[in-house]
Image 1 (cartoon, rainbow, N blue to C red):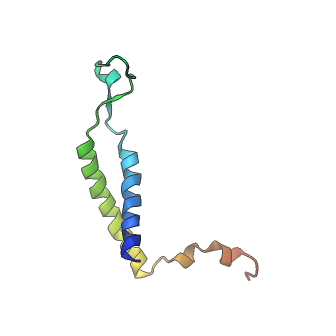
Image 2: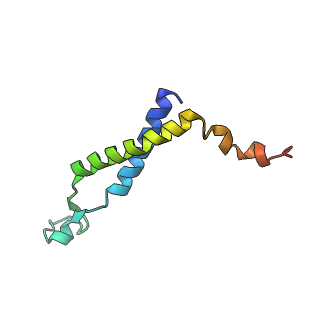
Image 3: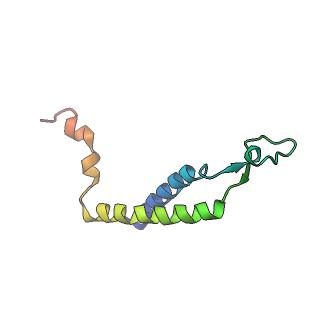
Length: 92
């Protein structure tokens, strides 16, 4: 795995975890009773974004390290996912 592949893998983990974490502990204007005129009651008031970004980065790094180790060790390779040659035409 090259450096670019490793960075892309980290970015995939990071963004996937970010989209999972965004709605957690979200306090809306409707929840707090502080709805502004012209906004929806579901508009976020308190997002805890800095704390979420910190946790997302820590968890993504914790998942990324073993994944890179597994890929670099050769336990799992691209050939393990090549189902066409395994079950396709000419397979025994």
